[in-house]
Amino acid sequence: MMLNQETHKMSLQQEQQKSYQEKGFLLLPNFLCEQEIAAINAKLSSTSWTDVPGTVLEADGKTLRAIHEDSTLMGVLEDV
Image 1 (cartoon, rainbow, N blue to C red):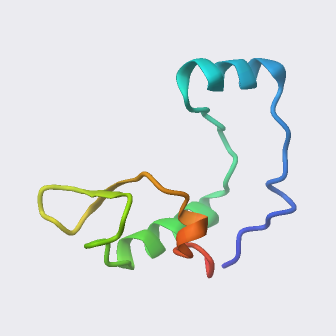
Image 2 (image 1 turned 135 degrees about the vertical axis):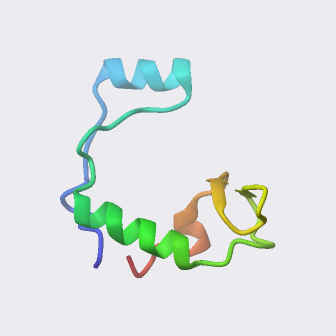
């Protein structure tokens, strides 16, 4: 499943921009549909994250906790 980039193009309202500047993140409810989320979760779950720069793993050393790099630059989600 490929993410529909055309569907996901958007511009932020001033209030959203201000919130991002203040908090460092945005919540975008319903930005992705359930199928897109399932595809991303499946890809993230099936990828080996050991020795990948910018990632944080859980105590088990396998389960991904966070990505602190632009995953699009890493190529991880290219085929999702």
